[in-house]
Amino acid sequence: MAINFEQALGVHPNTLAFRTQRAKVLASNLANVDTPNYKARDISFEDAMSQIAGEARAKHQARFRSQSPKTELLYRNPQQPSQDGNTVELGTEQAKFASNAMAFETSMSFLNMKISGLKQAIKGQ
Image (tube, rainbow, N blue to C red):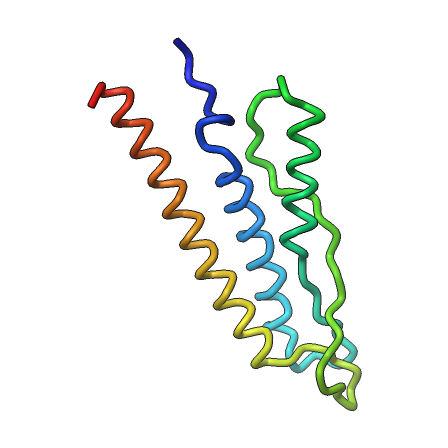
């Protein structure tokens, strides 16, 4: 009997891809904290997951793809506007980056548990 990895691993690989993509966007914001007129960007987790769920329904029989979800980058409104037009707030970006890193670790733990369960099932334990 063949194992369907898409069903077995669930949404966790897509979640990791999203977290990686979001980390790149947040790192770009942090790198441009002093760039005049730079606009802070972010990605909505809810939008990304609803897109993945829609694609899964539409392509139920398709093979597993480890592509990053193609989500729209959103602009972030600053709490306190700067004079140079930059909307990156260092503290906010650092907090969002740390939160995303913790969510990545959580998703990785869930994926590791799924894989450990599959290994045990294959071994017959």
